[in-house]
Image (cartoon, rainbow, N blue to C red; front, side):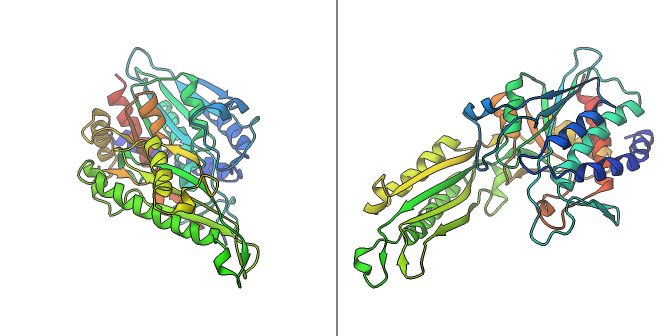
Length: 412
Protein backbone atom coordinates (compact mmCIF):
# COMPACT_ATOMS: atom_id res chain seq x y z
CA UNK A 1 0.00 0.00 0.00
CA UNK A 2 1.38 3.40 -0.90
CA UNK A 3 2.23 5.94 1.77
CA UNK A 4 -0.38 8.17 0.15
CA UNK A 5 -3.19 5.75 1.01
CA UNK A 6 -2.01 5.16 4.54
CA UNK A 7 -1.63 8.87 5.21
CA UNK A 8 -4.99 9.70 3.68
CA UNK A 9 -6.64 7.12 5.93
CA UNK A 10 -4.87 8.49 9.01
CA UNK A 11 -5.97 12.01 8.09
CA UNK A 12 -9.58 10.83 8.54
CA UNK A 13 -8.98 9.65 12.09
CA UNK A 14 -10.73 12.62 13.72
CA UNK A 15 -13.69 12.17 11.37
CA UNK A 16 -13.95 8.55 12.46
CA UNK A 17 -13.98 9.55 16.13
CA UNK A 18 -16.66 12.19 15.54
CA UNK A 19 -18.91 9.75 13.70
CA UNK A 20 -18.48 7.04 16.33
CA UNK A 21 -19.26 9.37 19.24
CA UNK A 22 -22.46 10.42 17.50
CA UNK A 23 -23.43 6.89 16.49
CA UNK A 24 -22.85 5.25 19.87
CA UNK A 25 -25.15 7.85 21.45
CA UNK A 26 -28.14 6.33 19.65
CA UNK A 27 -29.68 3.65 21.87
CA UNK A 28 -30.32 1.42 18.88
CA UNK A 29 -31.42 -1.76 20.61
CA UNK A 30 -33.82 -3.92 18.61
CA UNK A 31 -36.95 -1.92 17.94
CA UNK A 32 -35.16 1.41 18.39
CA UNK A 33 -32.86 1.57 15.37
CA UNK A 34 -34.70 4.34 13.53
CA UNK A 35 -32.74 7.40 14.73
CA UNK A 36 -29.38 5.71 14.12
CA UNK A 37 -30.49 4.71 10.64
CA UNK A 38 -31.59 8.25 9.81
CA UNK A 39 -28.25 9.55 11.04
CA UNK A 40 -26.30 7.12 8.85
CA UNK A 41 -28.55 7.93 5.89
CA UNK A 42 -27.48 11.55 6.27
CA UNK A 43 -23.80 10.71 6.71
CA UNK A 44 -23.68 8.25 3.82
CA UNK A 45 -25.27 10.97 1.69
CA UNK A 46 -22.02 12.91 2.09
CA UNK A 47 -19.92 10.21 0.43
CA UNK A 48 -22.21 8.05 -1.75
CA UNK A 49 -23.75 8.63 -5.16
CA UNK A 50 -27.10 7.15 -4.14
CA UNK A 51 -28.64 6.76 -0.69
CA UNK A 52 -32.08 5.42 0.12
CA UNK A 53 -34.13 3.97 2.91
CA UNK A 54 -35.31 0.41 2.35
CA UNK A 55 -38.41 -0.03 4.47
CA UNK A 56 -38.92 -3.14 6.57
CA UNK A 57 -42.65 -3.74 6.91
CA UNK A 58 -44.88 -6.13 8.81
CA UNK A 59 -44.86 -8.32 5.68
CA UNK A 60 -41.37 -9.49 6.66
CA UNK A 61 -43.02 -11.69 9.29
CA UNK A 62 -44.40 -13.87 6.48
CA UNK A 63 -40.94 -14.57 5.07
CA UNK A 64 -39.82 -18.19 5.65
CA UNK A 65 -36.48 -16.93 6.98
CA UNK A 66 -37.98 -14.47 9.46
CA UNK A 67 -36.61 -14.89 12.98
CA UNK A 68 -38.53 -13.83 16.03
CA UNK A 69 -36.93 -14.48 19.40
CA UNK A 70 -37.96 -10.89 20.23
CA UNK A 71 -41.41 -9.85 19.04
CA UNK A 72 -41.17 -6.44 17.41
CA UNK A 73 -43.25 -4.13 15.26
CA UNK A 74 -42.12 -2.46 12.08
CA UNK A 75 -42.46 1.01 10.66
CA UNK A 76 -39.99 3.87 11.07
CA UNK A 77 -37.06 1.42 11.29
CA UNK A 78 -35.74 1.21 7.73
CA UNK A 79 -32.51 -0.24 6.43
CA UNK A 80 -30.13 2.10 4.60
CA UNK A 81 -28.77 1.34 1.14
CA UNK A 82 -25.91 3.47 -0.20
CA UNK A 83 -24.18 3.08 -3.57
CA UNK A 84 -20.95 4.39 -5.02
CA UNK A 85 -21.35 3.95 -8.75
CA UNK A 86 -18.59 2.42 -10.82
CA UNK A 87 -17.33 3.93 -14.05
CA UNK A 88 -17.89 0.82 -16.14
CA UNK A 89 -18.80 -2.84 -15.96
CA UNK A 90 -16.26 -3.88 -13.33
CA UNK A 91 -17.03 -6.33 -10.56
CA UNK A 92 -19.37 -5.11 -7.85
CA UNK A 93 -19.18 -5.63 -4.08
CA UNK A 94 -21.82 -5.53 -1.35
CA UNK A 95 -20.77 -4.41 2.13
CA UNK A 96 -23.17 -5.41 4.91
CA UNK A 97 -23.27 -4.51 8.57
CA UNK A 98 -25.85 -3.75 11.25
CA UNK A 99 -26.73 -0.87 13.55
CA UNK A 100 -28.81 -2.73 16.13
CA UNK A 101 -27.06 -3.50 19.41
CA UNK A 102 -27.73 -5.77 22.36
CA UNK A 103 -28.99 -4.19 25.60
CA UNK A 104 -26.39 -2.85 28.04
CA UNK A 105 -24.59 -5.40 30.18
CA UNK A 106 -25.21 -5.58 33.91
CA UNK A 107 -23.12 -2.89 35.55
CA UNK A 108 -22.38 -1.15 32.24
CA UNK A 109 -21.92 2.52 33.12
CA UNK A 110 -23.07 5.07 30.51
CA UNK A 111 -23.09 2.50 27.70
CA UNK A 112 -24.33 5.02 25.12
CA UNK A 113 -21.92 7.76 26.11
CA UNK A 114 -18.76 7.05 24.12
CA UNK A 115 -15.47 7.51 25.90
CA UNK A 116 -11.96 7.44 24.47
CA UNK A 117 -9.07 5.95 26.41
CA UNK A 118 -5.68 4.89 25.07
CA UNK A 119 -6.85 5.24 21.46
CA UNK A 120 -9.82 2.95 22.11
CA UNK A 121 -13.47 4.00 21.73
CA UNK A 122 -15.69 2.45 24.39
CA UNK A 123 -19.47 2.11 24.29
CA UNK A 124 -22.30 -0.24 23.43
CA UNK A 125 -21.99 -1.19 19.78
CA UNK A 126 -18.44 0.15 19.47
CA UNK A 127 -17.24 -2.99 17.70
CA UNK A 128 -20.53 -4.82 17.16
CA UNK A 129 -21.17 -3.24 14.83
CA UNK A 130 -21.16 0.58 14.78
CA UNK A 131 -17.42 0.53 14.28
CA UNK A 132 -18.09 -1.51 11.15
CA UNK A 133 -20.57 1.08 9.90
CA UNK A 134 -18.00 3.79 10.55
CA UNK A 135 -15.45 1.76 8.57
CA UNK A 136 -17.82 1.68 5.59
CA UNK A 137 -18.26 5.44 5.82
CA UNK A 138 -14.48 5.88 6.05
CA UNK A 139 -14.01 3.65 3.02
CA UNK A 140 -16.40 5.75 0.91
CA UNK A 141 -14.79 8.95 2.19
CA UNK A 142 -11.29 7.65 1.50
CA UNK A 143 -12.19 6.89 -2.10
CA UNK A 144 -13.16 10.55 -2.42
CA UNK A 145 -10.03 11.82 -0.72
CA UNK A 146 -7.84 9.74 -3.02
CA UNK A 147 -9.97 10.54 -6.09
CA UNK A 148 -10.28 6.83 -6.88
CA UNK A 149 -12.92 5.88 -9.44
CA UNK A 150 -13.67 2.16 -9.31
CA UNK A 151 -15.03 0.37 -12.34
CA UNK A 152 -17.61 -1.62 -10.39
CA UNK A 153 -20.36 -0.54 -7.99
CA UNK A 154 -19.94 -0.59 -4.22
CA UNK A 155 -23.25 -1.18 -2.45
CA UNK A 156 -23.58 -0.73 1.31
CA UNK A 157 -26.37 -2.41 3.27
CA UNK A 158 -26.82 -1.04 6.80
CA UNK A 159 -29.46 -3.18 8.47
CA UNK A 160 -31.62 -3.64 11.54
CA UNK A 161 -32.22 -6.74 13.67
CA UNK A 162 -29.03 -8.70 13.04
CA UNK A 163 -28.77 -9.54 16.72
CA UNK A 164 -32.08 -11.42 16.73
CA UNK A 165 -31.64 -13.38 13.54
CA UNK A 166 -30.99 -11.12 10.58
CA UNK A 167 -34.40 -9.81 9.59
CA UNK A 168 -32.92 -6.61 8.21
CA UNK A 169 -30.62 -8.58 5.93
CA UNK A 170 -33.53 -10.80 4.89
CA UNK A 171 -35.25 -7.63 3.67
CA UNK A 172 -32.11 -6.51 1.81
CA UNK A 173 -31.60 -9.89 0.16
CA UNK A 174 -35.20 -9.71 -1.06
CA UNK A 175 -34.60 -6.14 -2.31
CA UNK A 176 -32.87 -7.38 -5.44
CA UNK A 177 -29.20 -6.35 -5.29
CA UNK A 178 -26.60 -8.75 -6.58
CA UNK A 179 -22.81 -8.54 -6.76
CA UNK A 180 -19.62 -10.44 -7.47
CA UNK A 181 -18.58 -10.50 -3.82
CA UNK A 182 -19.96 -9.64 -0.40
CA UNK A 183 -18.12 -8.62 2.75
CA UNK A 184 -20.14 -8.84 5.95
CA UNK A 185 -18.43 -6.54 8.41
CA UNK A 186 -18.22 -7.93 11.93
CA UNK A 187 -15.41 -7.62 14.51
CA UNK A 188 -12.92 -10.30 13.37
CA UNK A 189 -9.67 -8.52 14.28
CA UNK A 190 -8.78 -8.52 10.55
CA UNK A 191 -9.09 -12.32 10.32
CA UNK A 192 -10.93 -13.38 7.16
CA UNK A 193 -13.77 -15.82 7.80
CA UNK A 194 -15.01 -17.50 4.60
CA UNK A 195 -16.74 -20.28 6.55
CA UNK A 196 -19.41 -19.48 9.15
CA UNK A 197 -21.40 -21.87 11.29
CA UNK A 198 -25.16 -21.73 11.38
CA UNK A 199 -27.49 -21.82 14.37
CA UNK A 200 -31.00 -22.57 15.53
CA UNK A 201 -32.55 -20.99 18.60
CA UNK A 202 -35.09 -23.20 20.35
CA UNK A 203 -37.97 -22.48 22.69
CA UNK A 204 -39.31 -25.70 24.27
CA UNK A 205 -42.14 -26.37 26.69
CA UNK A 206 -42.38 -29.50 28.82
CA UNK A 207 -45.57 -30.43 30.67
CA UNK A 208 -45.69 -32.68 33.71
CA UNK A 209 -48.18 -33.66 36.39
CA UNK A 210 -48.23 -31.14 39.23
CA UNK A 211 -48.64 -32.28 42.79
CA UNK A 212 -47.63 -32.07 46.44
CA UNK A 213 -44.11 -33.06 47.40
CA UNK A 214 -45.58 -35.56 49.85
CA UNK A 215 -47.12 -37.51 46.96
CA UNK A 216 -44.12 -38.12 44.71
CA UNK A 217 -45.63 -41.21 43.10
CA UNK A 218 -48.48 -39.19 41.65
CA UNK A 219 -46.44 -36.41 40.14
CA UNK A 220 -44.25 -35.87 37.10
CA UNK A 221 -41.87 -32.93 37.45
CA UNK A 222 -41.72 -30.88 34.27
CA UNK A 223 -38.48 -29.39 35.59
CA UNK A 224 -36.77 -32.76 35.85
CA UNK A 225 -38.02 -33.67 32.39
CA UNK A 226 -36.53 -30.42 31.09
CA UNK A 227 -33.19 -31.39 32.64
CA UNK A 228 -33.46 -34.71 30.82
CA UNK A 229 -34.01 -32.82 27.56
CA UNK A 230 -30.83 -30.81 28.15
CA UNK A 231 -28.99 -34.14 28.44
CA UNK A 232 -30.63 -35.39 25.23
CA UNK A 233 -29.64 -32.23 23.35
CA UNK A 234 -26.10 -32.53 24.71
CA UNK A 235 -25.81 -36.09 23.44
CA UNK A 236 -27.16 -35.01 20.05
CA UNK A 237 -24.68 -32.13 19.88
CA UNK A 238 -21.76 -34.41 20.71
CA UNK A 239 -22.80 -36.90 18.04
CA UNK A 240 -23.19 -34.48 15.16
CA UNK A 241 -19.98 -32.67 16.12
CA UNK A 242 -18.12 -35.99 15.94
CA UNK A 243 -19.73 -36.74 12.57
CA UNK A 244 -18.50 -33.40 11.17
CA UNK A 245 -14.85 -33.95 12.01
CA UNK A 246 -12.53 -34.11 9.03
CA UNK A 247 -14.99 -32.49 6.64
CA UNK A 248 -14.11 -28.83 7.23
CA UNK A 249 -10.52 -28.24 8.38
CA UNK A 250 -11.13 -24.60 9.28
CA UNK A 251 -13.66 -25.73 11.88
CA UNK A 252 -11.62 -28.74 13.04
CA UNK A 253 -9.09 -26.47 14.73
CA UNK A 254 -11.70 -25.61 17.37
CA UNK A 255 -12.60 -27.93 20.24
CA UNK A 256 -16.26 -27.00 19.96
CA UNK A 257 -17.07 -24.85 16.91
CA UNK A 258 -20.85 -25.38 17.24
CA UNK A 259 -21.69 -25.08 20.94
CA UNK A 260 -24.98 -25.90 22.60
CA UNK A 261 -26.07 -23.16 24.98
CA UNK A 262 -29.13 -23.47 27.21
CA UNK A 263 -29.53 -19.89 28.32
CA UNK A 264 -32.87 -19.99 30.13
CA UNK A 265 -34.77 -22.56 32.16
CA UNK A 266 -37.89 -21.50 34.04
CA UNK A 267 -40.32 -23.63 36.02
CA UNK A 268 -42.47 -23.88 39.08
CA UNK A 269 -44.78 -21.90 41.33
CA UNK A 270 -43.83 -23.32 44.75
CA UNK A 271 -40.74 -25.01 46.19
CA UNK A 272 -42.72 -27.97 47.52
CA UNK A 273 -44.70 -28.67 44.38
CA UNK A 274 -43.75 -30.68 41.32
CA UNK A 275 -44.14 -28.12 38.52
CA UNK A 276 -46.58 -28.74 35.70
CA UNK A 277 -44.65 -26.74 33.11
CA UNK A 278 -41.05 -25.94 32.36
CA UNK A 279 -39.67 -23.77 29.57
CA UNK A 280 -36.15 -23.94 28.23
CA UNK A 281 -34.57 -21.66 25.65
CA UNK A 282 -31.21 -21.87 23.99
CA UNK A 283 -29.20 -22.14 20.80
CA UNK A 284 -27.42 -24.95 19.00
CA UNK A 285 -24.75 -24.22 16.43
CA UNK A 286 -24.56 -26.24 13.23
CA UNK A 287 -21.82 -26.91 10.70
CA UNK A 288 -22.10 -27.09 6.90
CA UNK A 289 -22.71 -30.85 6.76
CA UNK A 290 -26.25 -30.28 8.05
CA UNK A 291 -28.98 -27.85 7.11
CA UNK A 292 -31.03 -25.97 9.65
CA UNK A 293 -34.06 -28.05 8.63
CA UNK A 294 -32.22 -31.28 9.36
CA UNK A 295 -31.06 -30.07 12.76
CA UNK A 296 -34.51 -28.88 13.79
CA UNK A 297 -36.05 -32.21 12.76
CA UNK A 298 -33.34 -34.24 14.45
CA UNK A 299 -33.47 -32.29 17.71
CA UNK A 300 -37.17 -32.93 18.09
CA UNK A 301 -36.76 -36.57 17.07
CA UNK A 302 -33.98 -37.04 19.62
CA UNK A 303 -36.44 -36.17 22.38
CA UNK A 304 -39.36 -38.17 20.95
CA UNK A 305 -37.20 -41.24 20.37
CA UNK A 306 -35.22 -41.06 23.61
CA UNK A 307 -37.10 -43.97 25.19
CA UNK A 308 -38.98 -41.71 27.60
CA UNK A 309 -42.67 -42.48 27.08
CA UNK A 310 -43.71 -39.23 28.73
CA UNK A 311 -41.66 -37.08 26.34
CA UNK A 312 -42.78 -39.14 23.35
CA UNK A 313 -46.33 -37.85 23.89
CA UNK A 314 -46.88 -34.68 21.77
CA UNK A 315 -49.05 -33.26 24.56
CA UNK A 316 -46.11 -33.29 26.98
CA UNK A 317 -43.36 -31.76 24.84
CA UNK A 318 -43.41 -29.04 22.20
CA UNK A 319 -40.58 -27.13 20.58
CA UNK A 320 -40.39 -24.05 18.37
CA UNK A 321 -37.36 -22.73 16.50
CA UNK A 322 -37.20 -18.97 16.42
CA UNK A 323 -33.86 -18.20 14.75
CA UNK A 324 -32.70 -20.35 11.88
CA UNK A 325 -29.42 -19.86 10.04
CA UNK A 326 -27.62 -22.25 7.73
CA UNK A 327 -23.84 -22.42 7.71
CA UNK A 328 -22.07 -20.96 4.69
CA UNK A 329 -18.79 -21.89 3.02
CA UNK A 330 -16.37 -20.72 0.39
CA UNK A 331 -12.88 -22.18 0.18
CA UNK A 332 -9.88 -20.46 1.82
CA UNK A 333 -8.20 -20.09 -1.59
CA UNK A 334 -11.21 -18.41 -3.21
CA UNK A 335 -10.17 -15.33 -5.26
CA UNK A 336 -12.12 -13.01 -2.94
CA UNK A 337 -10.22 -14.36 0.07
CA UNK A 338 -6.85 -14.14 -1.66
CA UNK A 339 -7.44 -10.58 -2.86
CA UNK A 340 -8.63 -9.44 0.55
CA UNK A 341 -5.64 -11.11 2.21
CA UNK A 342 -3.20 -9.24 -0.02
CA UNK A 343 -4.94 -5.97 0.83
CA UNK A 344 -4.80 -6.70 4.57
CA UNK A 345 -1.06 -7.34 4.34
CA UNK A 346 -0.59 -4.15 2.34
CA UNK A 347 -2.19 -2.26 5.24
CA UNK A 348 0.44 -3.69 7.58
CA UNK A 349 -1.82 -6.30 9.17
CA UNK A 350 -1.40 -10.05 9.31
CA UNK A 351 -3.34 -12.03 6.71
CA UNK A 352 -5.11 -14.91 8.42
CA UNK A 353 -8.00 -17.18 7.38
CA UNK A 354 -10.23 -19.02 9.83
CA UNK A 355 -13.82 -20.09 10.46
CA UNK A 356 -16.45 -18.21 12.40
CA UNK A 357 -17.84 -20.10 15.40
CA UNK A 358 -20.73 -17.68 15.78
CA UNK A 359 -23.47 -17.06 13.25
CA UNK A 360 -24.29 -13.88 11.35
CA UNK A 361 -26.05 -12.70 8.20
CA UNK A 362 -23.43 -13.97 5.74
CA UNK A 363 -25.40 -17.11 4.83
CA UNK A 364 -28.20 -15.06 3.26
CA UNK A 365 -25.85 -13.51 0.71
CA UNK A 366 -23.69 -16.59 0.19
CA UNK A 367 -26.35 -19.30 0.09
CA UNK A 368 -29.43 -17.52 -1.21
CA UNK A 369 -27.94 -14.96 -3.60
CA UNK A 370 -24.92 -17.17 -4.41
CA UNK A 371 -22.52 -14.28 -3.83
CA UNK A 372 -19.12 -15.39 -2.49
CA UNK A 373 -19.12 -13.97 1.02
CA UNK A 374 -16.43 -13.33 3.62
CA UNK A 375 -16.91 -12.04 7.16
CA UNK A 376 -14.24 -9.48 8.00
CA UNK A 377 -13.75 -6.33 10.03
CA UNK A 378 -11.88 -4.35 12.67
CA UNK A 379 -12.27 -4.93 16.39
CA UNK A 380 -12.36 -8.00 18.62
CA UNK A 381 -15.51 -10.12 18.97
CA UNK A 382 -14.29 -11.10 22.43
CA UNK A 383 -15.32 -7.74 23.89
CA UNK A 384 -18.62 -7.44 22.03
CA UNK A 385 -21.75 -7.50 24.22
CA UNK A 386 -19.61 -6.85 27.32
CA UNK A 387 -19.43 -3.85 29.63
CA UNK A 388 -15.96 -3.20 28.20
CA UNK A 389 -16.97 -3.18 24.54
CA UNK A 390 -14.55 -1.08 22.51
CA UNK A 391 -12.77 -0.75 19.18
CA UNK A 392 -9.29 0.63 18.46
CA UNK A 393 -9.50 3.79 16.38
CA UNK A 394 -6.55 2.66 14.29
CA UNK A 395 -8.35 -0.60 13.48
CA UNK A 396 -11.14 1.29 11.72
CA UNK A 397 -8.64 3.49 9.88
CA UNK A 398 -6.47 0.57 8.76
CA UNK A 399 -9.51 -1.49 7.75
CA UNK A 400 -10.78 1.30 5.53
CA UNK A 401 -7.36 1.55 3.84
CA UNK A 402 -7.23 -2.22 3.35
CA UNK A 403 -10.70 -2.22 1.82
CA UNK A 404 -9.75 0.53 -0.63
CA UNK A 405 -6.82 -1.58 -1.81
CA UNK A 406 -9.04 -4.66 -2.09
CA UNK A 407 -11.66 -2.81 -4.11
CA UNK A 408 -9.10 -1.24 -6.42
CA UNK A 409 -7.82 -4.67 -7.35
CA UNK A 410 -11.14 -6.52 -7.38
CA UNK A 411 -13.60 -4.11 -8.98
CA UNK A 412 -12.26 -4.40 -12.53
